[in-house]
Image (cartoon, rainbow, N blue to C red; front, side, top):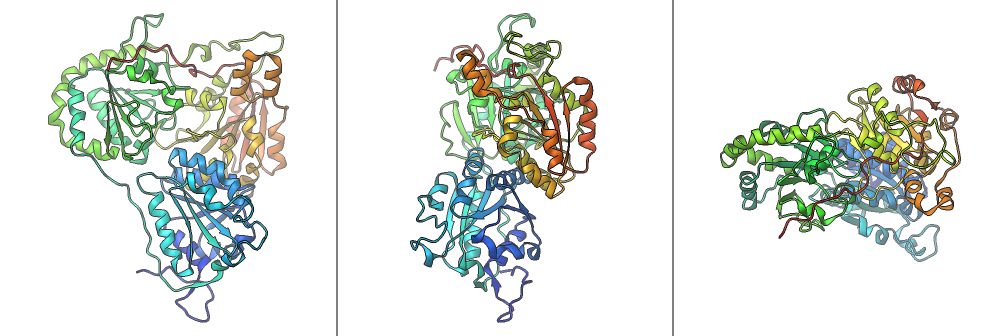
Length: 600
């Protein structure tokens, strides 16, 4: 078994190593170049050894920020990432971020220091066993591995177990607790990196149903989810779609899985998605768009979680005659709800199998191709945008001038203009709120793994922190966080972390002085409810400069291009604070009028 390099001062035995350095060098051997943390008493022994191990310690303003950074780092690298903090309040501060990573199947490791075993129950400061906030019990529902290292000699084995579980089929967070005194004990064992690989599985019996379904349908659609990205299958899926003229819609989280400029892409399906994707899935009655559009006959659901964002959480998706759901996790909680049947398979392995078995379906798909191309042309005749947010309609879509200010900017146009200035390969982190849907709807994504959001839990305020993690993972690409002023109020201090570590991220704030989604939803309850959703006015550009970064406040369209150009040209973090109108409704976020489910 290979030994981790020993660079510490160990006079007693050259083969011995302190547990804290051993763990750090083991994580370095696993490919970790950054660890995100808030320092504290129970992890102090680690603090002098990050640089010795060759890892950059990134100190966040808040443990939640550290966890969000690690989540962004993990997603951008398509691997696991590590955040660190003390037990007790350090762990509880991470809970929301880790629950979001769990819901989205993102492998974030929480490495926590805890009081020594010998102190437990003796009322030491921040002893989680005595304060009603036991760390392991709190983490249990949101991790796939929940371990406390019992002996110094077990440290490597417990780290390996945590990584294997995190990077297994479920691809979710893990928790590893290291008692304080143990961190300074010595260990003799070497460490063999796990270096996990993707499980390339396929159900050899059920996979044959896919060609049979292709042979029985003309209008076929691929619904691409994040499992396709995790499987590294985007190129295969795109090639298959192009070869047989099969349209592709994506979940919001998988936005850009194939370029949204590709002829087969209809964009995002679901909340904030495109009317074209909606028409493909549900059809469209005869309207001003040019006649009735028939719905799809068959959908292959590729690694997609059918949550509220991308299925409206409605049984009406059953109106599609044939649904086949593909995922490598056989334990999806809703696997039978929306599918004719479940195919347990890795997405890349499935498309490799299809490529090797073309004789089972190629003739039928080639024969039906002209009809499918005519159907796609119909879908293309449907406007991509919701008419309420097109640039030709710059006025607010509801309300009166008496209590809603005029002259403020349309978020859709703000983002559309941003796309014309931002470099082609810009990575976007979309924070939670009304800005999520404005971004998902109006931003064009040209390739896979360039769009990130917390899609299932969707806590507010992660945008800046996640963008820091993404940028550290992929330093050669521009990274942009699109957030609301409510998001900024929650964890905006992590902008100071970006300044501290000279991380050149661009932050665009859709500053409508409101909790946008809440404001629009409570409009029907009257003025008092609306007032509770309003926020005080701030100039976040001044905040950026006060933190040591840079920023521009913009309240007119003419100044937007210059502001965006300055932001992307900056060599440090930059805020563009854009004054938008809170009365614009988010695009395509109302459940469509759906057909009745197909008979069983």
